[in-house]
Image (spheres, rainbow, N blue to C red):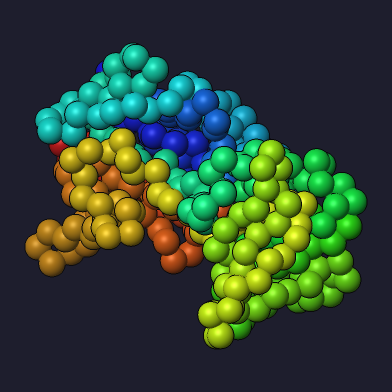
Length: 312
């Protein structure tokens, strides 16, 4: 029996763990086999406060984990499988083991989206990737493509430019949605070029990617573009498929509510079931930053502390 079980181990989960354990709560984090969240797949993080020269994503998450462990939070690297949220204490199953919790914080984050076009599925890992940090080495001195227009696409392109012969960003619109700072870095990199208003219709290749079919969003004409590799950076899918019984919005994110009592705000991070709270990218599709995820994790922890105190 735990006072609180935290599902997920990104910035939100680890921050929640810090606040819960410091409040004297018996705290367990179900971190997952692939713990650490999306930052484990990034390189230099320059927008997280406190690091003058920036910090590598995996280093940041390792530091967070060590801090949480030092404070006494129990962490298990096992995957959450299912939860019974119909009554308290809640029952959570992970790796065939069952854990009980008086309160739960869900911070399972979100995973990368795929293009879902012909040829993509069979060539994943054979020239198609969603992680330049992981796979850039295999494309040294080759021509590669990044599909997307946000900050993650810019980051992928910059990582690849360090090793690839050339990097082409393909975006279905006529302008990026990425931050101006990231766009400036991309436009100043001579190895990176941009193709505007084109959408990927098909991935070409038998045993390895050889190219793709692009559709012009203005003229609807299709053309072939040759490349040695494709890096997909078009967004994320929230990890909510195993969270049955909770309200999910049309985009697949957990609905996060503010709860008031007698006209006063009581909780900011409540899910649709009393005693279940939520923090980070699993509900946030607007900001999706490490620092906001950490902030949401802090809010969820403070709400849990208040909830348990009021429901002794």
